[in-house]
Length: 329
Image (cartoon, rainbow, N blue to C red):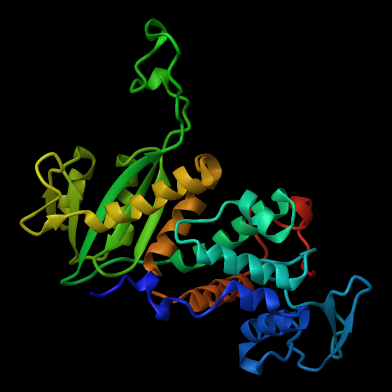
C-alpha cells in the first residue's frame, strides 16, 4: 500500500538535529552560499559589487565584511529581509527549519519556547518569513488554454461571541451586529498547479482581481454563489451546487476547498487569530505550503531562505522592532 508523501523518506531531507548541531560558522556559510550562490559563498559588496572584502567580527561575535573598493561595511544579511538582525544566524536558520517542518503553520509562542527567544522577536521573525514567501506570488497568473482553475472564497475574523442569555442574543448575520473585521480570503487555484490568494471585503469585490490573474482560455470552476456570475462573461464556467454534490459532471472546487482546510486548521490549531492587517500573510503562507506539499523539507527551507536573502528589508517590520529602516545589520 502506497504511503503519503509526508510519511516517506523522500520528504525528510533536513532534520532539526542537523540544524541544531551546526556551529555558528557553519550556519553562516550556509547563508553565504544561498545569498552569494554565483561566487560559491564568497561575499559581494551590496553597494559597489566588490568581491575582495576584509572579514572581521564585532565584539558580540557577529560576522562583518568591509569592502576594499568602497570601504563600506556589510554583513550576510545587509539589504535583505533579515537586515538589522540581533540574533545569531543559526537562530534564523533554526527558525526557518522549525517553521517549515510544520505542515499547517507554527505559532510564535511555540517557536519562542523552542529557541529560547522572546515571543515578540519570534513573532516578527515568522512574519518576515511569510513576507519572503509572498515574493513568489508577485505577478503570478493562473491557467491558460486547456487548463482548469478553481475559484472560491471563505470568511475569516470578526467573530462575535453570543450573549449568555438567549433573549440577549442578536442575529450575527446582520451587518449592524458585526464587528467590521470580517474579511473574505479568495483563492484562485489551477488544477494540479499553483495557487494565488488575496483578501477582500467580500467575494464580489474580488472579481476584477480574479479577471486580471486568470489567463484567457481557462475553464473556471466555482460554486453556485451569485458573486461569481460575472466571470461567465470572460471565461467558460462550470458550476457546482454543494448542497447537491461536491463534484458532478467534471465540476468541483475540491482543490480550493483543500486550501481553505489548511488555512482554517492553521487558524484553529496554531494561530487562533489571523484576521486584520496580517490576514493576507497567513493566507499566502497557507497557499505556499499547499503548492509545496510534495516538496521535501530541506528544499523548502533552502527556497524560503533564498527568497528572504534575495529581497530588500521588510515593508512591515524594518529596523529594530520597527523603529527605523537600516541598510546594514
